[in-house]
Image (cartoon, rainbow, N blue to C red; front, side):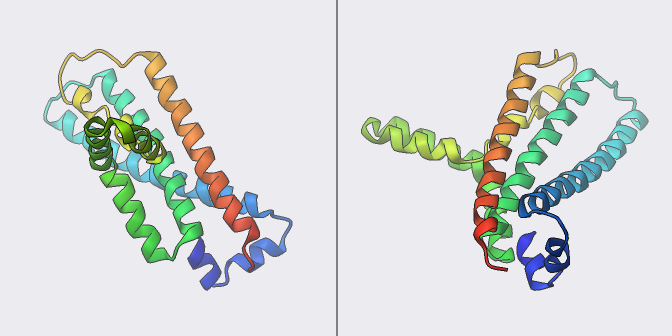
Length: 183
């Protein structure tokens, strides 16, 4: 997100106005979230239409599933923005893909390593706590089955808290890099 703004020189007219660097970063983040939510909503509407066409009964768990997925997209946007502040576009895209789609596999590996070596378990646990936990937002196994109850409200609120805290941490890291960057 950020290197292209600098390379194409579209950043300079924006920062010449009374826009702080944090405002610029936060605007990029909100724009990325809006685009991903709109894309997800369009996909959800098409899936809902297909389900309706095939006579599949709509249950509230599907709405909860969609809300959780949208919260996960906020974390994806925050991680991608942060990586783009520190890397080239190609490297940021590749590492975002690896981190976000491979994090569940990495987390399982770190958990197995922690169980296998109790002396270094603190190290593996520390590393896993910094990885984005995108799998937490996936209620697909509940939504795919009929007559499942909704996830408890405290779970959704905990996910919202995680989304907020992790995204704020990522935005803080990107701002820390971007505010010192010579442009």
